[in-house]
Image (cartoon, rainbow, N blue to C red; front, top):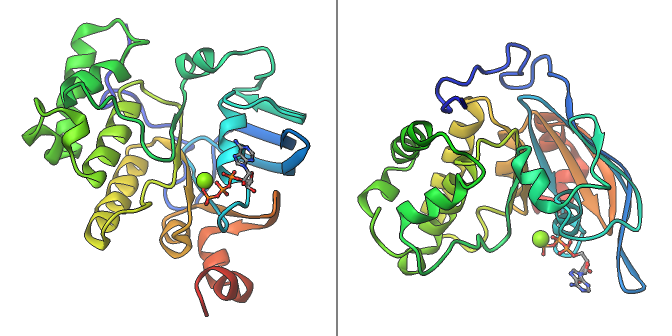
Length: 258
Ligand SMILES: Nc1ncnc2c1ncn2[C@@H]1O[C@H](COP(=O)(O)OP(=O)(O)OP(=O)(O)O)[C@@H](O)[C@H]1O
Ligand SMILES: [Mg+2]
């Protein structure tokens, strides 16, 4: 029987705010990805450890989404290796990875517009068969995202952008991810909604969910991250602790307009 999120033990080795990290869950080695003849990702290396919140920042077209898609088997690798839970993902399909807990909330959210909020959440749990646990997790999602509870029978397509982002995150959490990849969750939202989204990301992190946060909002993303990576023109150009990067003059000049 699967455990609900609440019952699931948070790894004792998980870092709380940048302390000792757990074992490596995701490792990307010299990843290259091309669209036709054009190389968008040119040899990227990064890793994510259990319990970490890792932010990947970089400007438009840097290759962040392309990297996330390759990691989740949405795009083929031209070269390099990706290991998830210690195994190469080369021979795995996108669905295998979701079933094993590697779950992405894509840029633009992708909720099922013609389904209600509750139906969307149930879709997120399609890899599970523990009915009672699923029901308990839906209630937990309504606790984390009260806005979704108020609107549980509303069609997802009629919700605001911020509400859809919350639903997309809640739906992903319903699959009990081991590593949750969020691609620009704050994109296109009002300042109040951006605040709310970062608050929720921090809450989910505090639950012990390992996360990769792809963001253009560099200051917010680095402020809550254990570690960060800066991506430019298909390469990782800087890495360090979230606060370290946030204080780095090069990051401040390039991404924080200073
Ligand atoms: N389907 C595609 N076909 C051809 N080129 C693509 C395709 N998708 C992305 N690219 C190109 O690959 C490069 C990296 O794009 P990607 O979407 O990964 O950037 P990003 O870092 O996610 O940017 P953003 O912050 O704007 O989302 C860009 O030059 C982009 O134009
Ligand atoms: Mg992108």
